[in-house]
Every structure is written in C-alpha cells, then in structure tokens.
Image (tube, rainbow, N blue to C red):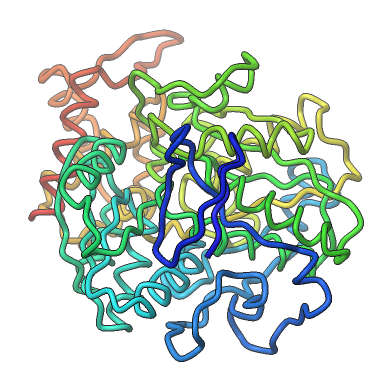
Length: 468
C-alpha cells in the first residue's frame, strides 16, 4: 500500500497501516496511480460496497468480511421539498446499512484488512457509530474488538457494541480524550489501529458513498454532510474527484459541511480563513459530531474550499426540529448529527444561498433509533427502555429542556402526554429547587432553561441510566 502526505507530498510504501507523516505530522491519505487503474477499471456485480474493489486498497477476497454494507437508497424527499420550498432535495440514507450507519463501509474494509494481516485484536476510540460497526464486523470475523468510549456517547450505540461482544473501556468526557488514551495505551504493532483520523482506509471506504450517488442520480450541485472530525466530508469529496478523474462523471459538486453551533471548530476556521484549532469546550445533542479537536479538520477544509462550498453551524434547537420534520414528512428517523444537514438546508434555503432548482443531496449518516433517550422522550415508551422510572422521567424532561427554552405544556406534549401535566410540573419544581433548571416569566407563561449544573447532572444521569 502507498500513502501520501497531502501537506508535504512525502510518500510511504508499507503493508501495515500508518496514519501520520513523519515529517509534518499531517494525516496521510491512500494514494492511487489513476493512469494504471483507468485502463483496467471494472465494477463487480455484488450487493455491497465491494462492488468498487478496483478503487479500494487491495484485500484478498478470501479475507473480505461483509454484511451487505453499501448500495444504500437515495431518494427524492418530495414532501420535505414542499416544506422547504425546494424542488430537488435528495436523501442518501446510510441508516439502511447493517448496523444502521455509514460506518459499516469502513468496518468492512478495516476488519478485512486486519484479518488479511493476521491481527487478532482491533482497537478503536469511538463516540458511537464506528465502534458499533467495528464490533459487529469483528464478531463476524472472530477478531477481538476493544472500543474506548467517552462518557458522552449515545446509549443505543453502546448497547450495539455490548451485544456484539466488544471489550468496552470508558475513558474521558469526549472522544478526543478517548483518542489520546488509545495513543498512550495501545501504541504497538500487536493491535490493528481503527480510530478515525488514524487509519486512512476509513476514508477509502467512505468515499464509496460518492460513487453510489453518481451512479444513482448523477453529480449533485451540492452535497451536505455532518462534520465531526472532518473525515466524512473529505471522504465524499475524494470519491467525487476520483470518478471525475477517471472520466466517470463530468462535473464536481460543492461540498457543505455542517456542525453544531455549540461545537464548531471547522466552521470557525472556515469563516476566519485560518487553520483548524482545538475548541476549548463544547456540548451538543448531536454526539456523533461532538469533536473538539478534529484530526481530519484540515482535510475537511481543503474539500470545502476546493469545491467552492461552505461550512456552517446550526443550533441544537434547529437540529431537534429538523429531526422531527424529517421523520414526519419522509418517514426517516435519523440520528441528530444527520439532521444537522436538514437544518442546514433550511437555513441556506431561507437565506437564498440555495436556489429552488438546484440538486441538493443530504447524507443521512445514521439511524435515530440508536438515541434511546430522545426516542423515549418523543414516544413516551420509557418502560420499554432499561431506565429506572424516576431517573428516566427526570432525564427525559431535562434532556428536552437542554434542547432549548420551553414551557410545561409544551414538555407535556413532547412526552406524548404519557404522564399527567401535574406530574410534569411537579418534576419541573423539583429540578428547579435543585438548581438544575431556572425559570423566567413573560406573557403569563413560565419558561424553563437548563443551568450549567443541570448540564453536568444530565451527563451523569445518562451514565447512570446505562448502568441501571
């Protein structure tokens, strides 16, 4: 395999996985000689992303581990188009993958590669989807998976890792701290490195999403991707560029990267025309994109700038509303990170940035069914989830208030009226007495907001709920 540093152009040839340039410490990318590929290019007729094996790092077919990942649907969001005043909004629904996220593509390639090199253990720091996907594929391959997760992680994704038999190690508040733990404790050649930002093959697997989009509807005018560590938006841009380089498409899209306004280091760098800097702090309901120090941040910026696209942030309140509208109008229950793309479309459409006739494709990276707390809050089916009743209801109320200022009757409706309105107000009084929320009165109505202490307690309650 051949790797290249995009910053200093140094090359590395090796069979093992290397992640950072020894000269400038930039993330490496996998390198292809397209002139040699072009004449012998062919796509196989298989029901997985391995259809594009000729454009992926070589893995002996005998070692390929597949659960049928890839070939996900892409469809026109007809009702959502009407709501947003657009004509050509499309959704690439990666939640239809085997473990319900786009990370299954990466898991298939990484586990196959690890197996081909005779590794017995794979290690990854993950705040959710990648860890869940790797755990599943390692189970299929009979390879040990060790996943380091932070405290702030969706419980549904943890449940997936656990049921697939992963060795789960808790470390840090955010995935950034989990990554540092991996580098300190697993820096040896006895385990296969599978952390995003430290394995260039992840980008290679994820670029196949772009290939599929081109084959399904052609090249969109805009492709909108949620951004955490930055690897996803760069992956798709690399895929679109490769198809263009190989003469399989005749234009390139503009890439739009979306982050939460409460954690947006890549957006800040884009707006300032500067390099990506670590965010000092951050908190968002979109945990899949809660990354303070994006390892692929510069690659993400290069994709957005080179394509003529933009990076923008949206509020958690807008993300939650987008999740509701997407489910209601299109029957797609997506994870909060994915819904940041829908919130971005709404924001850009209202500002006039996006025109009615332009072809816009949003990548839905994962399923909302992994976010069990929000599911409980919206449906009222808390008894179907492993939560103690008292902790569960307070958690649901506190989580809803954390999305933005609200009032009692609205909370009651959001809980699907599964408890009495009186009970809701009783919990609100108790939460306020304990300093977890505060209220303000205006227009003859009492509005509630979460306090800094409430944010900390919410995090602790979520961890407690997982242990109950």
